[in-house]
Image (cartoon, rainbow, N blue to C red; front, side, top):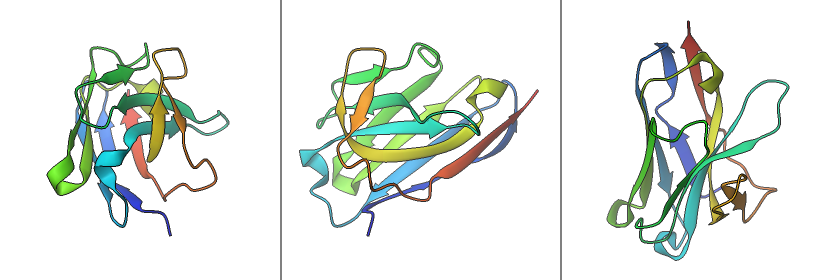
Length: 126
């Protein structure tokens, strides 16, 4: 059973906003960094943003810097991704996962790459 469940996706026009939510269960949530990944059709899964265990350290892909904000509430075992000024190229299935954050271009590496949730779909129309 995957302990992280994503929600909050939807369909918006370019320039719009969405807030994704990732809720954990059965996981020592504050023991893990958590990242958001996305995968568009025909493309590899990529790291979008990562939050350290306390939330003080955050990392972003260059493509979303300044538009997306990751945050977490350890008391609620929940992590969020606020996405503003969405672009058509942001359209993808978004996943959250326990991760190792990286300051490099990969942003994050999933700790359990064989275990992904159902994800939440983001569609952006131009």
